[in-house]
Image 1: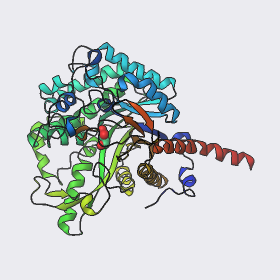
Image 2 (image 1 turned 45 degrees about the horizontal axis):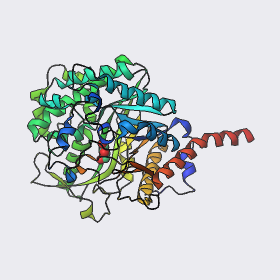
Image 3 (image 1 turned 120 degrees about the vertical axis):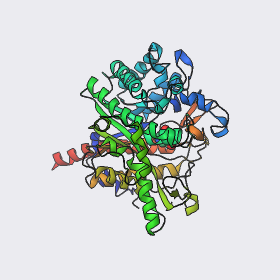
Image 4 (image 1 turned 90 degrees about the horizontal axis):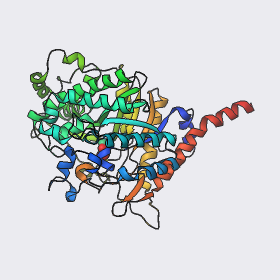
Length: 468
Ligand code: IFM
């Protein structure tokens, strides 16, 4: 597995220059806090995380990083680190407290200030319309299982485009639909905590429809905007070469990597490999098939690890189980995930193999380790190594012709990691959640230096050329 050695890195960087986007990603619920400030309505996550027993140590993001009040100083920090692309999401219930109807002007003002503050600093905003925080009032009306959610979401998208579209060049419709429907509507471990196929299947179909319809809204209002959407993905390998394990890996791959991507590309749901999905027929209406695809300008790929699959009679619907990294002798991250850098290369190759995919951006990649502040510094060599190794694999794919032109670290600030609470720290910047003190980690400084070197590359080449 290639490491980014001193001698190799200039070769990998060559020609990247300004054309490659080096950024970092965050999400509204995970950082903003201010959960009831200035007219914001409750989201499903506000309700879920404030109910006992749903999250690690019953933690919630009522305050989180208090980004709502501290965004100016945080953007200063981002600027100091030379990170010129910033991906963040809009909290639906900050803009529409009840999900539909009356717009909360103070919420709109906040995002206007945030976008303008980015632009003033030369930071390009990349906006995700939906990163899992459905307004609670809409969940009371059925949430993602109610087909009306497609219209509610399009109305919300239209409001956002009208208010912010003039200044935001990159839009992503949904963040990881597989995760918010799988964890929130099948497993019940994320908000809104609903379970089983009766909830998952309609939620899945409505999220897939909303994704494409939302993209159409963005393009209708800003034809010049770059419109994408983001998919979680994991490189899936079988535990053994036995045909049963190999088939189990095919099913897990279909579930984790193809379920939302393929309908978005016009290929329909992967029914052949996942026959239980046939239940979707009940929710499909005439014309839906042609509404599911959209010609996305880019696909956001979000990858952290690989999964090893084995056959299992006990696991309903997929007859497959995942073998935990710790059981395989790996030294996992705080999320229990194996560090396997080649996974991102494999997934980029896999996504790029679809002829419909024009352009890829790694909209999330990163790792959680137990960081501590010592004498004002955070030494996090494992994260730096993780980032180096994964970036090397991204550039390897690029060198082989994969059309990837951006990489965003998850994440800028340590933040609220959903059901895992504040324990897993993914940030380039450490946050002390008692004092809100920020401390740039060594990996943050490494990323800063890496970006500087990449940007300098074409200048150096030009110089060489003129000297010749
Ligand atoms: O924190 C999450 C993010 O919200 C979505 N993608 C994965 C990250 C790490 O688990």
